Picture 1 (cartoon, rainbow over the protein chains, first blue to last red):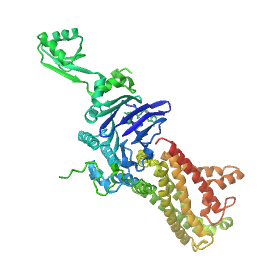
Picture 2 (picture 1 turned 90 degrees about the vertical axis):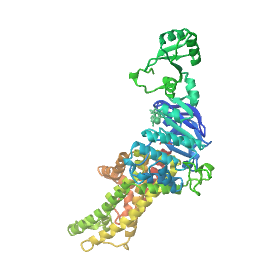
Picture 3 (picture 1 turned 90 degrees about the horizontal axis):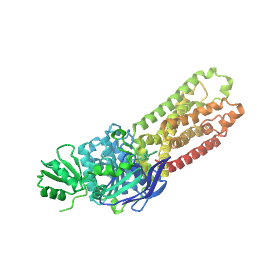
Picture 4 (picture 1 turned 180 degrees about the horizontal axis):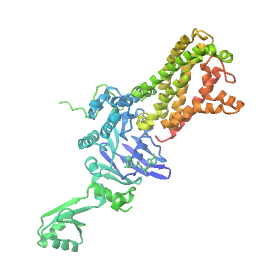
Length: 307
Length: 282
Ligand SMILES: Nc1ncnc2c1ncn2[C@@H]1O[C@H](COP(=O)(O)OP(=O)(O)OP(=O)(O)O)[C@@H](O)[C@H]1O
Ligand SMILES: [Mg+2]
């Protein structure tokens, strides 16, 4: 259980994290989402006591990170795949971490095998690919078999097999009752990995809750309709108060503000043949875009998303 | 049927089970072990220590041999202040640089690689991390420094013998000067780790070190004599070096007083380093 209370962090005049409060429950994968520069990494650094907050607190099972007697046994973190000395071998990197917390040396071999790096254990990490660095970082996080895990963009640089591996790993870690906080840019990745979401923008909390709540809250739902008599159906549903737009990739209509049952009834009452009637939920990505639209700090101007 | 072991758990029977609370608190000694592994597990350590060895012994031997050859034609003044001990330890003028640079790298490489965040997450008590680094590196510098000092001294005296005055370890103050060479290197290492911690960048810390060791004392020579004497007398590395020679120069603190002066400076640097390390974001 991680508790973040009124956390604020300033770098000069930049307010990186702004009075942020949320909690990360055990037994679930909690996705930590936000656009670039939202303050995710900064928040994670403050949880780990690396950066000092201007005000507020972050605690792990009621204690600050600094007060943990052997922190690697309680919290494992992957912040940055490159947070290691390139001249040191993977096995020695882990040995250093293990020794610093009194973790048995046998554990190094175990975690190297878990992340699939046993073959390159003796190689210096300078030559590692980004994905190998991520795996080594994850191995470091797992060293002390901790109950709390923090991963900052763990799938960054991983191949599809690696992404699947990380996803399954996080799920099983949570299923074992651990607290798992994982930040990502990949909303659709979070949709299949996380059970619970903390969404921030410009350092402020935007939403906290289950994934389905989040999508619901974004209010973006529609029904996909295909019919040989599309024009008539369009007039009918619009007259009944729905809004429509053509589907981009194939002939059909996307109907908003009306559920599929009502559309079906209207069609039947007017003898319109339907070829398809598919309710569709917004993807997490769309919901995310919608909720964070106001807080995107580094929007690409060419796509015209208003700031 | 037995339940399968959790896929990510510690499976060994006697391994500490973190989530059941059976964990012994991490100690300073754990941090010392980790820092020892850090130092041993990178190639640059061994290369730099080899360079320190070659420079210290090689240059000491070279200077001793050349001095021996030219002693006959030396001026009476030079002969009066002739210090066979200092000559046989001449290589440490450069050798100290290699040892100090490695001390700097021991901390600055953590900043340049990003390892510092991993290190501080593993050891959040920052004073402990810094203390462990100082203990490990100072011990290495001390032991290596003593070994190199004795070898350089013995080789140098053999080369001086016959052509110029030479001394033995039994002569007055000679053993003190040789032993103090290792002590000087140990204290210089503490100062260097402090510089590295304060400055964080390798280039910046090395510049600072070179300024303190060579540039500022050199600048002092350009000052009026009275100023020069005051600066040279108390400048930590100049004062500290007096203990490594037998024949005293004029206008300096005594050997141990000079060394104490350098130790005080090392303590000040270390206190500043510890404070900034505590206060700063990693
Ligand atoms: N050490 C620092 N010094 C100055 N500003 C910083 C520092 N670290 C972060 N910031 C600023 O704080 C804000 C939040 O940055 P942070 O890295 O926490 O965002 P993020 O959500 O992790 O972004 P991303 O998704 O791109 O990783 C940004 O505006 C960033 O420029
Ligand atoms: Mg980030």
